[in-house]
Amino acid sequence: MSGNTFGKIFKLTSFGESHGIALGGVIDGCPPNIEINELDIQKELDRRKPGQSKYVTQRKESDKVEILSGVFEGKTTGTPIGLLVRNTDQKSKDYENIKDKFRPGHADFTYQQKYGIRDFRGGGRASARETVMRVAGGAIAKKVLEKKGVIVRAGVMQIGDVVADSYDFSDVRKNDFNFLDKSKVKSLENFFKELIKDQDSIGAKILVNISGLEPGIGSPVFSKLDAELAKALMSVNAVKAIEVGTGVDSVTMRGSENRDIISVDGFETNNSGGILGGISNGDDINIFASLKPTSSISQKTTTTNIDNQKVDLEVKGRHDPCVGLRAVPILEAMVALTIIDQMLIDKAQCFDVERKT
Image (cartoon, rainbow, N blue to C red; front, side, top):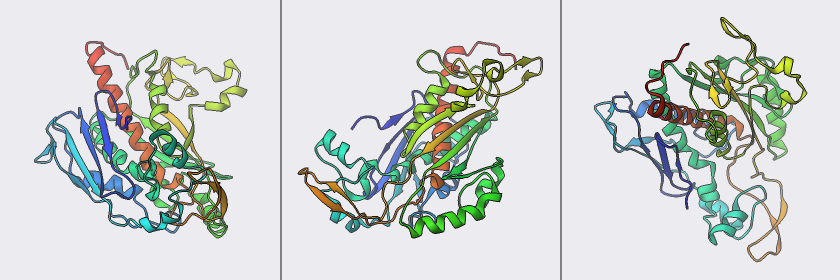
């Protein structure tokens, strides 16, 4: 299987399946002398681990990370950083009844078509369980970015018809929904109560914000910063659409409204989302990711099996009623990995360019 390495200079290669022994990753290209320890990574992993509230999957995993290499006396050495998280709460028997059936909305059918074999236990490599290593790698990327004053943060701005009226990133870690508007929490609690009762799921929209990034990051034409960020986020399970700045709302705007006027003090508006011509302009970068509803729900349905016969399907196991809740640290991680990689690429080519800020 190809496609398990992300990045050009700051690279993450991951391995492992949902019900395998462990998930692992190797970070290559990390600058030396970055202070990092297992606790720094664990803090990020704890934000995405399952079983933290009644609104997410009840699979219980500690997601305890082990640093195998590349860190000495609390600092990165510049050599490959090996990471490992062991699986401890697999319940593979929950999937025995569907091992020959294709679950609608999942990668069962396409994996079978591509490889002629698939790990049916929890979706195998196609499971969102693999994002553990994305978050672990992103934790290291964040530590590097912090030294440059770059901050990546995210929060849920919409779940179903419940939309945030305001965005406050300080609210995100104070509620079970990672929601940007605390005034909507009660509505979400009532909504999820009905959703779980109906054995159904719902989609979500997440805002990712990057602050402190200098102008000049991004490489036209085929490696525009927004293109690289979109690719990174679209690689995450369930993400179906990406918007930058005003995004799809730009369709109804006139040019006189949409263009960001430049004054001596900088840009007067930020409809571009902090990126012009595929290059950062120094403003905050705002990206929106829309995620589809969880495909694994308990409602009975029909499907086909590997012999192309129509069969009944009842999905068991433990699943998130809304994948968007635990996707927040995952999207932050992918953005952090992208930004540090693009900064290092920029440094390699434009190390002698003086920029005015």
